[in-house]
Image 1: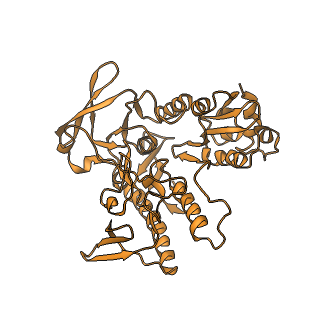
Image 2: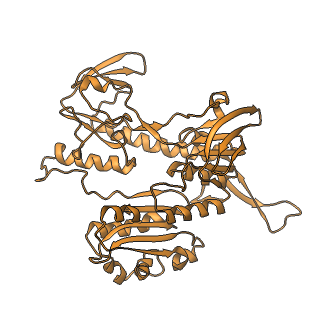
Length: 418
């Protein structure tokens, strides 16, 4: 199977004798991995080129504060550089949390994966156990299952994707199970036995009993930690919280004058587009030749996100549970409609999932929107635009949308308000 004339490493061919009418799918993980590397290198190379063209000096190394204005950089070649700045911006991000499981050190290094190393696999693991059912966990569980791995997904909580409403999480779980993922809720990994050359045994405590699950590889998707421990932030007077994240206010200012924090290093929500928008705030307040009358801040900004399962889960604004807690006096209403009611979803043969909107029943204001469905992130963006413009749901309900399109479902969704 190819697309736009390029070989992505996934091929469909007619099966041999005795299996007429059937196809066999072959996965070439070397080509899959190389495509990933090519895309990453292209993006990175473009960024580095633009920095160079702009006259920015880029130092590759490990930095630490010497004072509130001085930073020492340990260069890759072993040398050191001392640099000074009137303003300093920290955007050092996060990394996967280290695995914490009794006996994990007994396993061969290649059997223990995180969100970075799993993308470097050159084969499909036979038996993958994913610990943690957040965004990273569900995305890779489905991906590896579709590539042919036997996947078991363990979640300590009572639902997947703890941030989502329970009905959305349940729909995601149904899709994963349809795609072959074995989902175990309220299940905690206790320890791992090194086993033998073919795999290992994981001891798991469930709600009913303890059980043993055999696997060949284990993916830890249990959170991330900020890259702050080597920065010597105390030397600059920069405050951190108990988890090591930099404390910053709505203007991205830290406790040290003229030092600012952007992106994941200041804590959740940890999305790439948050870092982009943080730059918008910095640019407007500090770098613009025409600074805004009122300082830009993070207060009240809409934070959309997409979970890249297939179909996608796109969300913006408040979840139902958040809206009811935040506005106990409002007439909160919700509208839910299955994607099987969307003509375009049926025509493209991907009608799994649902749409869900949360509104103020009195004013018509859209408080939040979720689309678990084909191109869910794009549908979500349409509603996000309406929310940014202060439009009530009635404007979407009465709009003329092209047929057949996914957006035209926004004519019908609001008929399910209750």
